[in-house]
Figure 1 (tube, protein in one colour):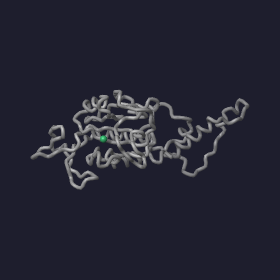
Figure 2 (cartoon, rainbow, N blue to C red; figure 1 turned 90 degrees about the vertical axis):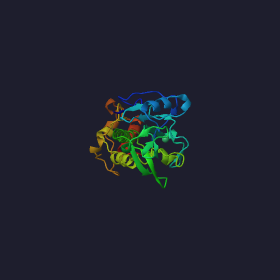
Figure 3 (tube, rainbow, N blue to C red; figure 1 turned 135 degrees about the horizontal axis):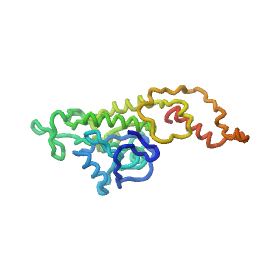
Figure 4 (cartoon, helix red, strand yellow; figure 1 turned 45 degrees about the horizontal axis):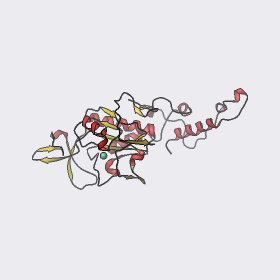
Length: 270
Ligand SMILES: [Zn+2]
């Protein structure tokens, strides 16, 4: 699984196009949600129904299956009224991932039920206190496959889009939303993604290519630390003078822009 940087879609992942979408965005955050529903199919149908006026970029099923509903650079409608780090309305700058999960459960006798009245076995229940509440309650557990998938996607998205943060819907709409809730290991997902990719370390030869082409580098680049340290001077070699062999000897503006871009890529997000 990779992110195709040209169409902002995951490769080898089924695509369904949601009509609930807006214009082009430049994502800065990743927002996790739960669907408060039973299946990936019901979630995708809901997010593709114009009447729901809701959507997200990805839905992750209980079995780890992923369906993409919009390219990552297109606005979807997952955050609603929300605020974070001075930004209001996170849909304008975030990628939304919906995890199929029933959400908060009610205990009736010895049994656990979702709001839509499906019973869940005890081994699918997490008893935990929500970070904004002061008493424990019952939550539908995420599956291992779902969490592996969420962690891998977070790594890839942080790396590809130089994201500034990973948050829960409850972080950006406290009091109004409680998803993805205490059963979701947000802190682990966040620290894994940022430990691997900040500062961004890429081989220097790659940094000197003008622009990224083709698929994103995913997953395995952390073993190749950049040979450049912060503060190390960069000298611009002959190669910048592309016209010198033709006797012109003038620097092209475009090349300087390439160098600036390459520098940004070496030294990480700004
Ligand atoms: Zn949500």
